[in-house]
Amino acid sequence: MSKRSKYFLILLVFLIATNNLLGQISVVKTPKPATLFTVPSYNNPTPQVRQSNPLPNNSNPLEMYERDKRELQQRNAELYKILYEYENSNSNSSIQYDLPSQFGMRGTEYYRQALDKLSKMLRGEMPLNLKDAVFTVENAYFENNLNYSNYNKEIKYLAETAQLKTMQDGGNWNNPITKNVMLFRAMADTLEIKVRQKEKTTVVSYPMQYDFEDYHGDEDWSKMFVYKLLATNKGQCHSLPLLYLILCEETGAEAYLAYSPSHSYIKFKDDSGNWYNIELTNKHIVTDAFIVGSGFITAEAIKNKLYMEPQTKQQVIAQCISDLAMGYEHKYGYDCFIKQCVDSVLKYDPNNLGGWMMKANYETERFEYVVNQVGRLHPDTLKVYYPKVYKLLEDRNATYRKMDASGYREMPKEAYEAWLESVNEEKARQEYDEKYNKVLRLIR
Image 1 (cartoon, rainbow, N blue to C red):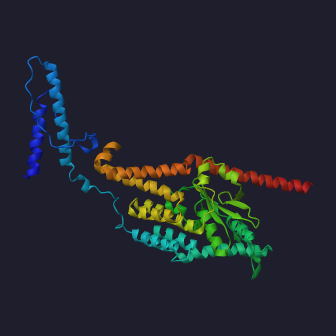
Image 2 (image 1 turned 90 degrees about the vertical axis):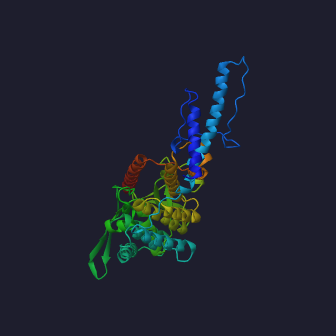
Image 3 (image 1 turned 180 degrees about the vertical axis):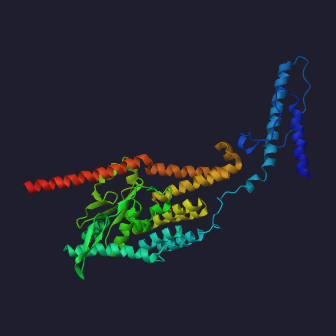
């Protein structure tokens, strides 16, 4: 037996023996991490055995008892500290502070390759190409099994449909506003295109529909993909605006992504600098007032450019890295790859809400993983005995405080569904007003 172990046993025997001096004081047990309390600080942790001075003949027995009790409690506190230090002398070094890596799992290599490619775009080592960036993100999820040729073919078909319809209707395809309107129509309307070789033959392009089934991708993350939208003609507020921007990139049109709570949409402006909002969920142009009407856009959020702010192409590519991280989390959970993605996103877009939300989730998962190793202690206890764990808690809380200060307010799923319903109602109202005004013009 080592000297240290012998010393520990002597202390333990001494502690039990001294506790038996007074039956009212319970035997001290070795503290466990989950039940530790704050121990007073002593300059000298070694217990000092005090010699009892002879008592005067007139001493009160109760005072003697209280004095002995105080001395015993002080010795016990000192022994507690020694026993705690003995038990935990090597515990801090054995704590795993990083989440277990999933890099050994099949398919994670495609995510690392995707992050590398997107990072090169943001660093200027490759051209910023949204079509390629979106495909890279989605292909990583499917372990490089998607067909880029088919993906590219469908995009070009939609772009050509918009152009041919413009020309057949006598429009000016070189007009930036015309391009935006016709790309919107290619996604939102039923268009008939005459085939030049066969004048009586037409090709029909059908509108894309909102997919109300699992629209957040909770059950199937691929529901969020542009590839899935092109294959099924159904998407939601993530894939529809991305496809529109890809079509703009393909044709040279100018438009921008913008966010509202749990939602994204398209903004573009006319020659006079007036902004318009394309809402692809209801296939209509809506006002800023309608977007603010969701009730979850605060003044602070607008001031901090979380919502309703036109995003640059670099910001959209940065958001693709956030999408990459979310796909990774759905397949493998949280590990250091998520942190790498978050750091990249916030480096190039410090106000990226998706990045901050992913950062908060990652820090929460990491803290939970570490604190489960030491026990769910009071923060004050963590601060004293596990300062590194306490620092993780502080970092996580600081992230949540920053999000709160930014004006972000979580939009419950029920509220979002109610908003979607209002989108459809707004569309119906505007269509009714348009038909009503048309009838009035005919009467007059």
